[in-house]
Image 1 (spheres, one colour):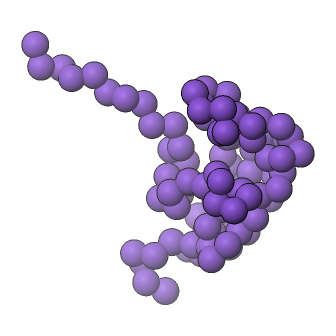
Image 2 (cartoon, rainbow, N blue to C red):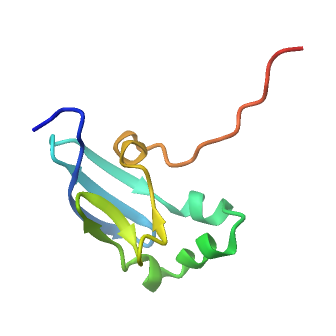
Length: 93
């Protein structure tokens, strides 16, 4: 295994919007997607707040995807459990 390449080996939904991920190096993450989805401005992303639609995720080539890549996340963000990027303010005064 190339340590620069990370793949998701399994994904199991454990709550309405939470998924347990297991990566090929044995790392596990429990990710709650609800805060990300609920705070999304784009209406296409917010449609994944429908529990049945959210539950339709699958693993494709080691990545977690919904639909035809309509919703997906960078693998490193999932690995780090950091899917909510917040805009930082410039500190220069």
